[in-house]
Length: 195
Image (cartoon, rainbow, N blue to C red; front, side):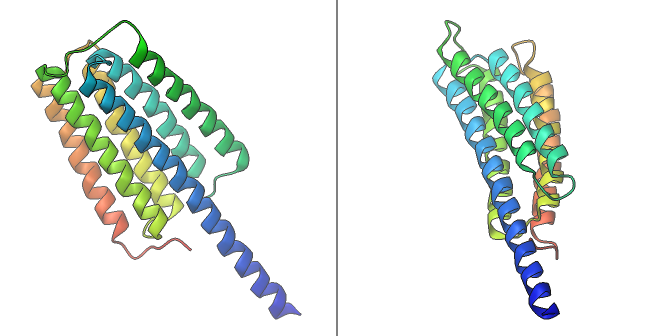
């Protein structure tokens, strides 16, 4: 009887861990999708550099919410609902910005810099999501990596807040992106595995 209870508890815990990891993976994938939409707006000229920077600021808030929610390794239903509400708000903001009367010049040096930085966000988010799905990243590790992503997107938002991203500003963003890339690699290749 005790063995059956213990086995049931272990199975339930592993199923909860898998469900939590799946939810975290879903949230990270949505981050990647939002970043992709921002980059597409920059490439098409439907977003200016300043608009993209404002959207990056909103993405930073969502990433921070995810970090805080996953600190303990679990994502409650209430936390998930709050994150989804924030993501829905950002999704609507992206749609509004892409369809307003402002346009950007996708061929300007500033837009090209922002495009490159946002594309790198897409890549990093996809790497994190892949790590969660494969079990190479625990929920706690994913939360730490989302905190790093929040730092990167906040730097991008500050760089483009005036509507222009200069070469020196991009260099600062790239330095943070390089550090984040190394963190993702280390976390995915350490001994910790999601249960």
